[in-house]
Picture 1 (cartoon, protein in one colour):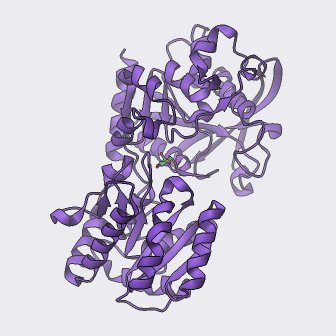
Picture 2 (cartoon, rainbow, N blue to C red):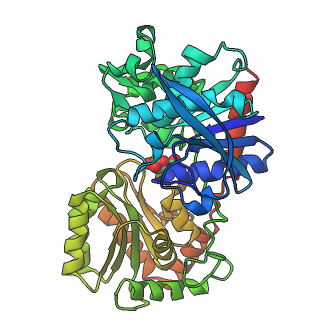
Picture 3 (cartoon, rainbow, N blue to C red):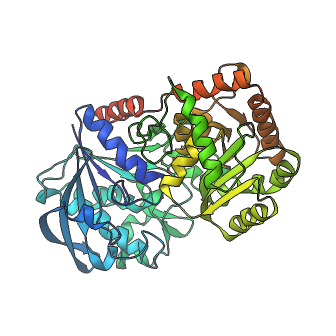
Length: 474
Ligand code: GLC
């Protein structure tokens, strides 16, 4: 079985969020199960030379972007045993950031066209092209409208995975012909809410639509979560399903992780305490074993639940013996809130604004509790990484958080959860976690249970393979 996995970012080459983790680890898991899965992504200017030096030039072609003909170099690289095709065009991709440019629509129209145009030149005819988010949503649209009946292209099936429905790729209608090169007759496929909506186009055209957890697959049928697309998804619900992400358990392994202070495992968790002391020191907090450390590693944006944290954290810090270790960057509102509490409670709040991957790992390893009260969370990877490092998650029951964390109140769960998007419900979960922490024996059992959770890709890879097989045999 041959699968071409198209993504706008993938580890180890380029990352801005969770998609890169998935695109960097699911293909490996598929490969281990004898699926010939290869990744195609843009060759961004930000990709480091150490990677560039290993890339092999394959060919160059011209790719149509409506009336334009654009240069498209194709490079090949290997990572984790997987073949990557990197699409080169410096005009589109030699920029300081991955997204947020005035011409993103044109950049990813080019990339999506390139995904299809390169096929005859790379000696790889996929059975499935697996697309991700709005950036590659034009692939199923182009396949349906342009390529499906062409020689060398027939019989390919397309899938789109929605990692976050908030980002849909919405453009003015005048862009349809001039940039996307689509005729008026295709308007009904891509038009939504008086815009051209690329994700809507993919939902219409792809053979299957998946999201990254079962709960999110249900949630996005509801307007509270769908950012407008619920009527379309409801109409196409027969092709919609959820498959939970896994994490790369080799990459995230407290037993071998070189970025943490001391290695440990579920069998020998003792060194976790040493990581905690080192973390407290790193963040300039008093080194106290009995004080619970709550870790937060996140983009500081509203949908991660920071409004709840803003509402009650002063109260928590004023009344409780607790420490926070916070790493992230994002909206001014939340950055300044954390600066305020760090200034007001220097002995309790350690803060680093920015994204520092090795520091994230030190927080997973050194914290007792991991707080992730998202308003919505398609899957969420941090809570699974936190479990892997024995930091007990407090989460809101939404999306993948609901599917991976169960409340330990029943004596079996692996964390603390709350339902409503309500600051005092979250506070209650925090209080229950802190109460559990004060019972040393009980807490050690809970940490062990967290460390033993298996969120590796095995199960999910099997589900993707079953989905691919069902499509191929159609
Ligand atoms: C997006 C989602 C996140 C998910 C990730 C990978 O970043 O917001 O919940 O874990 O994609 O699928």
